[in-house]
Image (tube, rainbow, N blue to C red):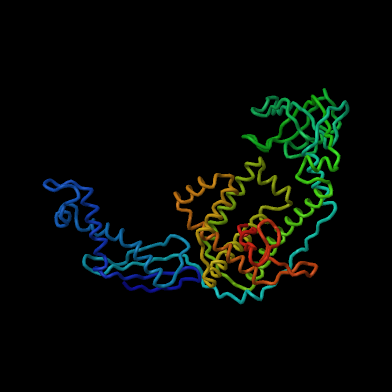
Length: 458
């Protein structure tokens, strides 16, 4: 077999392939065998019909067509390997010449990964925000913990922000109650938001036994976004009583004996979380610094497919949240043109980043072992809220393992990139990212986990 490649653009190639007829013999034999299993010829058992009889009964042309269909995918792959091309999509294949006992010629046009010349990424630098744990941060965590152990006590006064109320609620449109928009005896915290526009404002100042009507719009169902009249009645008002933050509370709410020990642990956990956030910021900053040094051509078909996929996913998220695109854009202060431009930039940056990381994988000769695959499967299962074994079975059955391998390799490439760079925070401290563990603690070089476990999927 002979092949030649023509570069149509930095991201699209045209292969011209010539296959001698003798190289088609295995495909031709397979074609005769397949057709023999499909036809019934008197005097011959199924599958035992001789080729000459098949030629006479079915036609040599049908056999040749079957042989070409069998041979083309394999010869196309061989040509890709021969010319060191990495395809990004399905090819457009055209048979340009083929006659019986003659050379088969075909062309294949396909989007391919662009050639990238990596700069010396061990000289990259990046700056990320310094971590700071304030007393207010700790106090917010303490208050959240106290609220988890708080109790509700009914009060004979009007509802205020933060109180819990028991309400009955009905939404109507044109005098008709909207199906599914009736609630009875629901507990709701005033000021929590996220239910109906205007509800919190209506509830403040209402006492048990009060009712009132206000205008709003539905956030779910078939009439999402439609204007409605909402009638709300309060049947009870409760305030939350929080336990004192003392040693007794610390022993009840945690494994610590004193409130001071619990506070120190809260501060330490906040610090670990901040370090993980800092590591994620470092990852993005280092990758951005590398991309800024490169001009990477992108296949428009790949970009378009990714844009459509992300747009569809985002619209589904809005639908599940009961929000329209218009409402989202209004909340964000964006026009649809701004939204599309931002989405386009993020998609192009993401596709370029994948190409760069794949190039680092090759340059560093990175591999994936069984232990890394098992850990990755468990982590992905936890993220999806699924049983690890069931998740793994699904991945194997649907041939998603190559995708997972690619995820791991890109994560390791990103870790290598970050570890090779010099990352400082805004206070001038050089960050020890190579020894950062997945829980946010700093380990020793011998036992530290690589940063591909720290947000490398984001």
